[in-house]
Length: 372
Image 1 (cartoon, one colour):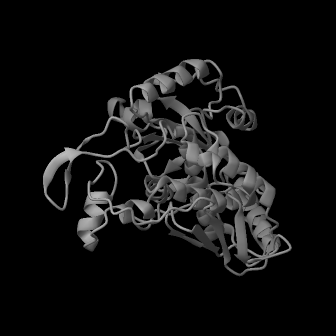
Image 2: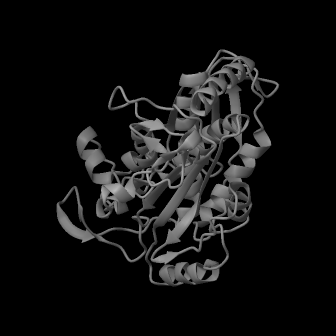
């Protein structure tokens, strides 16, 4: 399986291509459109989100909504496209303006950021929603939600199942799974907007019912955790990634951290976050990612005029105050894509029915071994 994106955030359209999906799998387009709407509706988003429709137009790969084995291609028109070249001369700290323009010899600094802007996550979400729908047919569920914004952490009830967490998240303007801190976070976002500043936060991603054996130990780039880390760090704004206990692991003794194994390969803890030696071990995959504050702030930041090399302040360009809820959906999508990629490597066949048969056969063999 392979996927690529193209287009500029403020250009005519953004595009995605997904190849390698088995044939005869029916895609729920309405569910994709609904998820795209959720991406636009988070509290703290810019007014531009209300302008765009975000309707994917599929141009290949589907017959009456079903895959046939060909590459799936689509584009999303920008309803209010702007001229991509804004003749930007003052690089914005935190964006790819300076490094990108110097690397490629560009006079207009806006082009590098256009290719890595937050709007490109709409393509991630279409691709990821297709992957999530496919995985759900095998009982694998993926959810990304807001864990904190700024220094305010959301209360988590571990007894709530993943489906109920999804319902909570999709009905929350902050994509929280609890209302305990919702009003406090909204007030923080409002105050931050008044101050001309922005906010980041932390996102949790959970994948449940993951079969044993996704990923590989043989090479540095085949491990499931290394592939997930690469995909998640590609989401605009993500600066840190933790699996399971993650950073806490450096402060715990080895005898305390390791997830001990009991009869039928069961565990009582999941400090490793569901991956050992680059391979899924049958526990839930648990990931926490950290999103930086949006780089574009109303109050401006110290920079230079690249043409004149004079110190100045950045000019304000319309942006979000907080995009953590939208980023959580993008992270969920990228996780779904990598899990599906590894899933098809292990169980894939040219057809959906063949993949299902392979999955059942291999799962039966593994369950027999750990229960004998």
